[in-house]
Amino acid sequence: MGVGSPEPKPKLDQMPQWPSLPLPAAAAAVARRAAPFALRRSFSSSTPASVCASASIHDRVSTTTACPEDEESPSLVVVGGGAAGVYASIRAKTLAPHLNVLVVEKGRFLSKVKISGGGRCNVTNGHHQEPLGMARNYPRGHKELRGSFFKTHGPQDTMRWFSDHGVELKTEDDGRVFPVTDNSASIAGKAVSGASVIENGRFVLKVEKRTIDFVDYINADYVVVATGSSQQGYSIAAQFGHSIIAPVPSLFTFKITDKRLADLSGVTFPRVKAKLKLDGIQKSAPELTQIGPMLVTHWGLSGPVVLRLSAWGARELHQYNYQAKLTVDFVPDIHIEDVKRILFQHKDHHASLDGDMHWASIPNNNLNAIALRLKQWIFEVVAKGQFKDEFVTAGGVPLSEISLSTMESKKQPNLFFAGEVLNVDGVTGGFNFQNAWTGGYIAGTSVGTLASRNNLRQQQSYLQLEG
Ligand SMILES: Cc1cc2nc3c(=O)[nH]c(=O)nc-3n(C[C@H](O)[C@H](O)[C@H](O)COP(=O)(O)OP(=O)(O)OC[C@H]3O[C@@H](n4cnc5c(N)ncnc54)[C@H](O)[C@@H]3O)c2cc1C
Image (tube, rainbow, N blue to C red; front, side):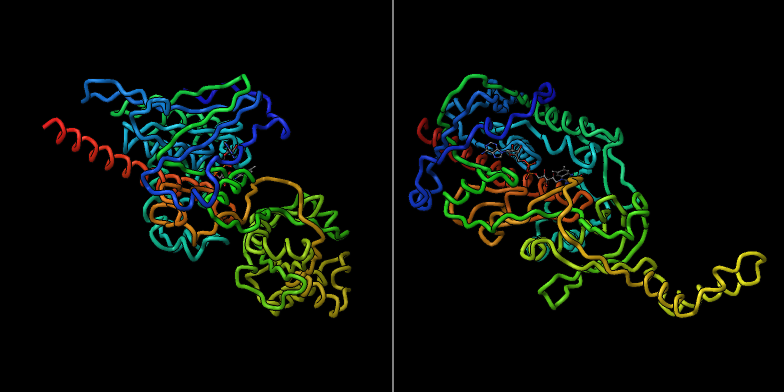
């Protein structure tokens, strides 16, 4: 089953607002693990949708229709139907089929999965199987994610998950992993159908649309906040006592108004070394030097090297109003003396050619200047580019305020976070989705395990009562 037919994007002012939680922050902070969450759901006419997962279980007499309205079973409410939220809900429901799962999505399910990777959906990166290597690709999170995080559910697990659910993937030379169809619609469709029917568990994921205005209250035993970079998600976190690291953009191109680039627009340099120097910051971090492809555009510079630099310098660039110097080495594998030697050799070579004396007549000083230009071309970055090929937000709930082994809040038991709502963001190449899959998987595992354990305890106490 798909996620429903495309609908026009609601305007921002029509978006349903997530209202304040009825629990004041202080009360929420002292709530006990057993106390269910009380969430108020307020929908306007802009058709928010909810997903209600249900499972019929073979080895039980009855068929369980798992909707939160069923007061008997514990319930999980996942706020946000993006990559992290959908993955978390599927995982929790897989582990605890009796669990009522409701995913509340204010816009469209998996909308970023559909638009990502230039429409191809770069689901993960297949070049880094080691947690340490993976973690190095996260400007925010590289220290914290070195441990169990990717060990629990890494790129290989994600790829297996997708192929188990019928989405064939391919890994490109640079490590980026795409569906073989090169069409992200198949990912979005499959992700949801994976939730609806799981081979042995017989899951059904149902999409509901509400077309009338209503305000509703949902009780939940567990909540996963997977709201991406939405302000509302940060407010929910803050109401449970979390601090928020101010969000700033990451992964953007550089606007450079340099006439020398005008004729090069559209040219790709497959391997340059670029160093970002920020005004006002003396010290240069090793990550602010990157090697890889660079693209000249009509507004400046783009390509993986530039996007990576924008990610590692995201906070400082924001602080200094996106003013910086970029030094580009166009021949990073050749020492400057060798560059000079090659230029001089060419001069000799050309000097011997009839009718072509221009190169030969270049003064040696100018050849030295050309060599220097090739090795150290300095550009002035004047602003952040507007082009959004891949775009994420740095900032959000600090990792120190959650347990990475469970994704549970350290402030509020039974509250979990996953995905971009946390202060984690990766460089380009599938790392941002991998953070969402891993976080969603761990959060879903935690809720599923807790719910199963509680269910078992409940069954035992019923048996004791009956006995
Ligand atoms: C144009 C673009 C292209 C990208 N391409 C790639 C790529 O190729 N590879 C890659 O790794 N990353 C890519 N990214 C980044 C990637 O999409 C995100 O990092 C990832 O989607 C984060 O997943 P998430 O589930 O945490 O958040 P999201 O995918 O943002 O999902 C959050 C969901 O929560 C909903 N929501 C928010 N607040 C509420 C609320 N109060 N109530 C109900 N619902 C709510 C939102 O509507 C949204 O659907 C791209 C991003 C963009 C913008």
